[in-house]
Image (cartoon, rainbow, N blue to C red; front, side, top):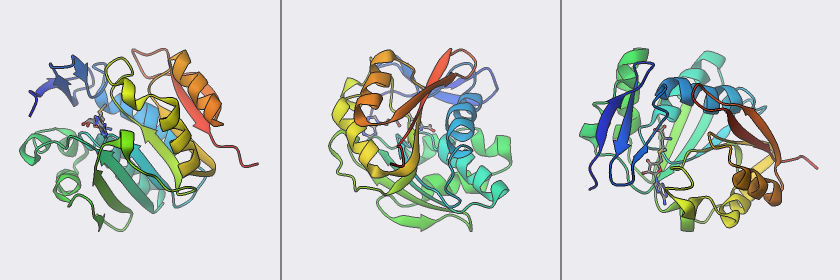
Amino acid sequence: MPEILFQLTEDGSHTLYLPEIDEHYHSVHGAIQESRHVFIKAGFEACEAQQPCVFEVGFGTGLNALLTAIEAEKRRRKVRYTSVDLYPLALEQALMLNYGKIFGEETLFANFHQAAWNASVALNDWLSLHKIEADFASMPMGENEYDLIYFDAFAPNKQADLWQQEIFDRLFRSLRPDGIFVTYCAKGVVRRMLQASGFVVERLPGPPGKHEMLRGRRPSF
Ligand SMILES: C[S@@+](CC[C@H](N)C(=O)[O-])C[C@H]1O[C@@H](n2cnc3c(N)ncnc32)[C@H](O)[C@@H]1O
């Protein structure tokens, strides 16, 4: 198991740091702030499906999943949330993260991490969770399955195998028409690969500390 260090980010929420690859799980300017900006505001709120099927690359700390569950309940939208991770956190590590405490949702946050892998679990009336332990680089995906994709892999210079044309082609096909893809990354090479897959791509203002982020939409024609 590689060494994982806890770090407080500027908004008071935790992130994790992997010294082995010199990479954080979130922005050090604010983990919750970044997750809310990129995945909830630009993704969940922009997604037109009333009962969205969400697919996440990189379950990690479960922060995106928790924020989605909170938003789902607030907006009364039922969500089917599928997330893949090749290196799930140990339960003791996950339970030391302060996200549940910050939102007064400690039980819900613990349930995200205690839920079985490779099974579908109803976490509450609003969200069902399916965590898949697999290497996303070689994971087969269906077509027309999802309304919203959170692409939250480690950065392209740390994990080039997940930022390849074939990956974006597969994700494009897995979306339903009008489905949305969001990522914190704004690199030109990523934007061009998304366009080559068929996405209509927008460059949006990024969260604090980042100039831009990307959102792609699968056109409906
Ligand atoms: C930036 S972190 C994800 C942060 C997460 N979305 C959150 O809310 O905390 C990237 C995640 O990708 C996972 N990962 C790395 N390589 C992977 C692979 N080949 N397939 C699936 N997941 C992978 C890591 O274990 C890590 O949890």
